[in-house]
Length: 143
Image (tube, rainbow, N blue to C red; front, side, top):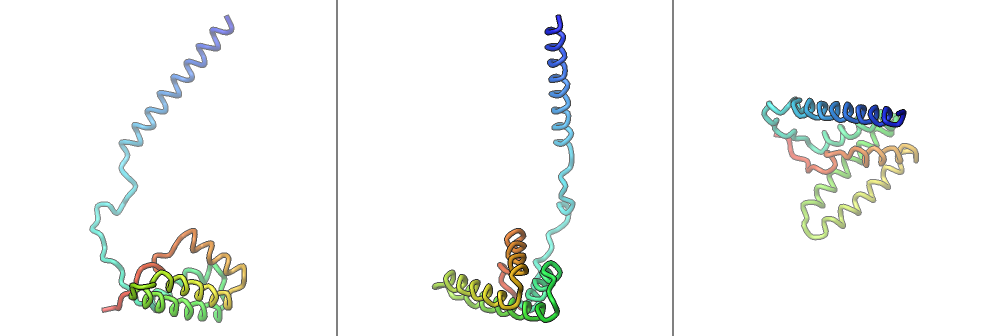
């Protein structure tokens, strides 16, 4: 007698759980997507010069890396130089990837002269976790 009561209770709980799960799926399918900008027109792409990109990258990493004013200015200078050289290497088709890898190594060496080892590790951790489109997109001249 005890056994049949337990089986009925388990069956009832499974049925209630199954019904609750299907209602949750139905409610989610009726919800509007969380894209609030879907109804708006796409904005024109932001056109930034290399110096603006270097400044934005420096601002982004300045607080995260706790850069001193001197480190910040050197970081911006090396970033600007890296962006200029990377754009020049990308314009050449032959050997561009090898040249870009060499430039990335040079940028890493430059940053290692400016940043402490913990700051450099944090920089690469942040860059790998949230890659910056500013490093990848070619700079365009302002009009």
